[in-house]
Length: 116
Image 1 (cartoon, rainbow, N blue to C red):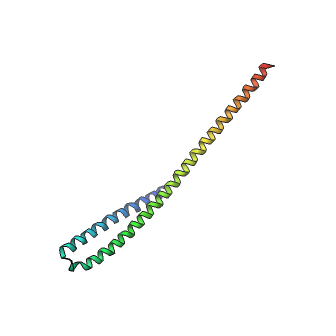
Image 2: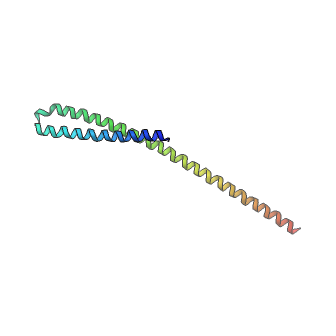
Image 3: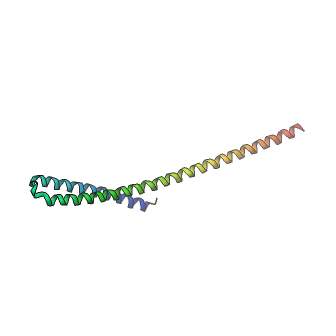
């Protein structure tokens, strides 16, 4: 993932977290205001609270979707890294096996020379 994508992603995640905190604080203020005004006077505030709760839920959903996308990309990077390391290990093993085969062949050739 490029540095621009990391910056955008971290900015978006931190921005969403800040929005979530602000929304939660605002909803707490509405609830406390409703408690001070009495139950009959806070119907509009309750409607506002419901509207803001819905808005908060939408923000939380957007945040969760971004987290899922981030984790999916992170998983892809991990899989690519594991595959690359596995291929490097396989290549090293093949090279070592070829070296061993060459040494065995030379050993066999040397034994034949000495036997004759």
